[in-house]
Length: 101
Ligand SMILES: [Zn+2]
Image (cartoon, rainbow, N blue to C red; front, side, top):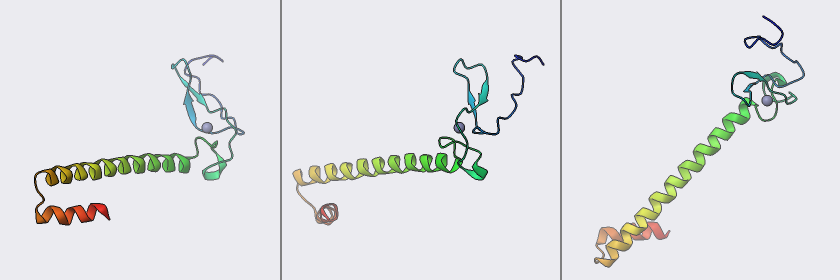
């Protein structure tokens, strides 16, 4: 394979992050150009640290969960208010107290 062959396996640069990233033009990948020193054995840059990627995913999931929870709570409130407009039943009163807590 020639020096600029498309399938050439680029030698690992031991000073840089081991993660592979896609080239901007999209036809291949190259080694991340950031300095390593993070993650397992310090092989990754700050951005590609696997622990950080996992933490980031958890954070995203948690935000999603919270937004779902919020939506659910506001839906319940709306349901109760509608119930009030139609005359409160005993079971709605119990629910109402729970929401106001
Ligand atoms: Zn990297």
